[in-house]
Amino acid sequence: MTILVTGGTGTLGRPVVALLRGAGHDLRVLSRTKAPGVSQGDLSTTEGLAQALAGTTTVLHLATTASSKDAEQSRNLVEACRAANIGHLIFSSIVGVDTIPYSYYRAKRVSERAIEESGIPYTILRATQFHEFIALIVRLQRRMPALLSLDIPVQPIAVDEVARRLAGLVGAGPAGRLPDIGGPEQLRLRAAIETLQASSGRPKPVVIIPLLGKTVKAFKRGDHMPGLPGFGKETLGDFAARASRNRVGSAGE
Image (cartoon, rainbow, N blue to C red):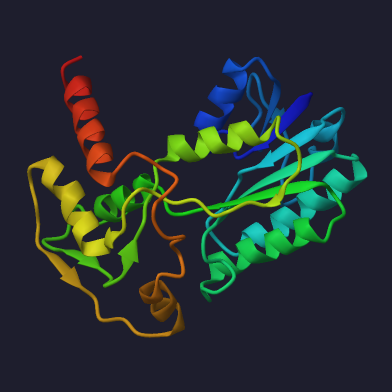
């Protein structure tokens, strides 16, 4: 079995690639940049894609632009996979993409449909936001005197737990759309931000932004959460503590 991973250098892709390599799989990582150990190819232009897929049996599509461009890239990949007679296409998606009218989520749903209608045997796994996403919200506002938050619930999950689930799908065979997965707790986004701030030792006030609209309403309903008990085991507090230990360890090196 030869496996091609798109997005293999990203937040989710790195641990998936590490797990698959550790299991001894014949692995290729698709990248636009020429580098040792990667198959050069571009999902937008399709340049190099056919060569990267040649001889491949399974594809894990983990690449994302975090924008509406995902739809076009996924369609390009599906066409290339069909031409290459790929036996199993695994796609990582997001909980709520079918009901939340956010452009990035809509692109994910278009990607799902392209895979579902392709005739290629597939598996689709939707997961909630990673803990790293909450950390990014904090990091992007690090220069502000107060942090901004929406008044919505979240059910974040550890990226390593999603990676293990995806890596395990490689040998399981096509299964269609699987049950959604999320973390072990549901909390308000404001509380999540405060949890991450507490571990930094420099907490700032968190201010709720009173935004309206269909997208915010869908998030407030919890359309992006699969419910409890979650699939994941690591809480956001566990993630914050681990990140804090890593920072201390790095500072001491």
